[in-house]
Image (cartoon, rainbow, N blue to C red; front, side, top):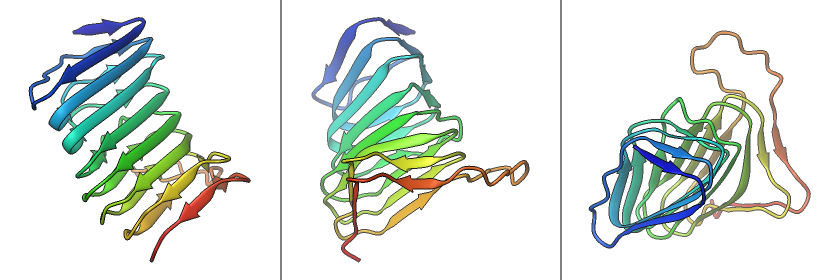
Length: 173
């Protein structure tokens, strides 16, 4: 297990980082040369930055930190139903989709999909595209879904999708 309290960077130039559970109350940056699967939970009050130079980012356990920034070149797939983020930004530069499933209100602070993949963001509460944020889907399609209840019960329909002034949402399709 790893506990992060300050600014910490973990870097592997290959596909060699294997991490246990992480408690993040600081600013954690994980940089990987190849495909990276976040197999164990990351929780706390800090920020998490995931960067993969040549591959995809996936997960096997929930991410429950306020802020997540992810960057890859062949996709970002974060679909654990236990994800609880407040803000999210992502960049994908070649191919593969950017997919996020989130439980709770979410603000998108920027998404850039310059490859051929799609962008699919789903949250169980309000979804906001923050002012001055941009969502660029390149040649892919955009799907934003707010107030989605995975169990199908208890949906109050009180959440909404908000695109704030200054935000740019661009899809070539």
